[in-house]
Image (cartoon, rainbow, N blue to C red; front, side, top):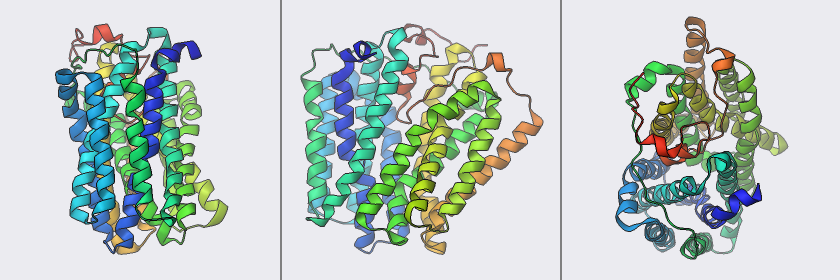
Length: 418
């Protein structure tokens, strides 16, 4: 196994270090804006700017890579992200910070596309699943551990931004010094959204609703934690536990969906997310909060790859990579809208409004899922595709799915033929 990841170890180290530096910024920025007196809607709009940047970057960053190459593009995106991070420490104004978050989203999307396309180029077919798994470990463990940097805010207000900038900058080193040849980025096939929705209404709508849920969480969870009385260290711990819980349950839920009707597993997962969200909306404290937080992360993080797997069950092999690309963009659009909706509910109902909004989104998805279950037939067990844990980053990550077609066949496949 380790022999498979040796050729890409510098990329995995780079993404771990970068996520350790940038992964906690949404939490920190939300807390700083609240302490400065910004309203919940303003904080939600600043959070939305980041996800909007991710969407734009996912669609446009590939042009930069084709023009200057992977190493130069990676260095440029990381340098701009580092500069943006330091700017937060110099000036604090919601409008400026919203612009900086848009830039952050663009840069992070660019970094993801660099790393994911490079990993795909270096991965042999038999190693694709292993490399994807290690990529997700590096991504989410870096994001989870980075939450602990929130605790440095007690020393001086500017320290967390400086530490984040240092880590982000250090991420350039393993990539710039790698001896691995950079790949040539090719355009990915596309699949019309209408065709995708016709194939799997539940899977497509589920991907968008998952974005709504997790965008709201990432944008405003820190505000929720502080308003229910958690200190800075406990807020960091809560965020870390949710992220780690999200990684822990994806594989067992996915294996379960391979053995039984995947629609039922998705519906059960949504129902459990609804129940946990309602419990979190009552502002529990102590160990119960952490248990519920881990449960929420495990259930909600699993929804996106479950929905992707369900969509893939109803598509041709040649369509799956293009479909996954569309789904991650749909997720990102939902994530951009989530903080605005949650902020509006929190403004009316208080801290628990975040999870009331999430519960409402889960309830809508649950109702639609139950209707689809009652009115449509399931995919036969022997025709279900194997579940694959997928990151919610950019469409390029879909190329690492070992269940999809080989990269060489992607360009020649007709995504609309049947």
